[in-house]
Length: 367
Image (cartoon, one colour):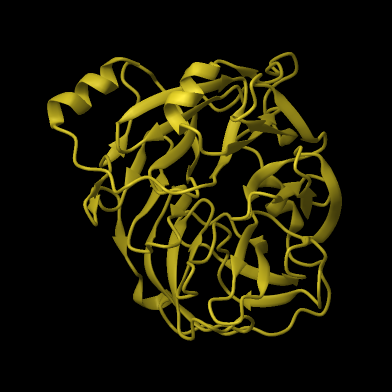
């Protein structure tokens, strides 16, 4: 796999942490900068996101399953607005969740809770939604950057993981990663913020079994945790890392399959896993494309990503896509916004079967 490097011996030593004295700390400017692909000059701000997917396309893509997507707008420097798109509604429309920030928003597996980053500090914020997708509770979790939910594999306790400081090192994700417990079924913080990893900046999630933590900016890495049940002061070693890449995504129930982007394309670590076929990489044909925020949905058959058709990130004007692996269909959802996560409820699709290469190419050329 091109550009993939093995773990560096000098960085593979076991790492430990300690309890965090306060929720603030670290180079917060770094965490703020991670929200922005790049700055745009005045007058180049994209309009608000506009839907391109139709109700018929949504039915074909998801059937009768409940499905919701989180969408953010970039003003060229940071996330500037967060919306939710509920695909089961008869009239598809964007519902506002937050008018400030909204970067790297992510669903809890229950589909009723959201965590995201705001540019005021920056801070990590969690929302609880009602059955109509209205925000009924909002809580500040701490100071930091990217953020992800994680449920302890033994106790069932619920946590939010987020890094708070780091270094723009293109070879290795230096920094630290924090974790905070929330009361089950809520977004209410419970107990203090703790340091999960002292010397690693990994904000893209932790596998369901607790064994792997992944992420990084602009270096991308996957670390193996010595004790999968440990919550704070975890010892871990780097298994894999690559420079000049970001947005690593691992399907948390299947840790061996992960993706990342070098912004020219989206790269899959394993094209075939358990009978399910994935592309080796995603590159939309006849498009310059700057790829950002690729992410597995909560159902393995679906994958979302965003791209700037001009091949530039400076104006922040992205287009959001959904890929269904079992059909190799690419569906454009909206323009002038980026998708950060897709949640699906109901029974999951059966494992996708390999699609003949000729058919796969045919589907790609329809874009």
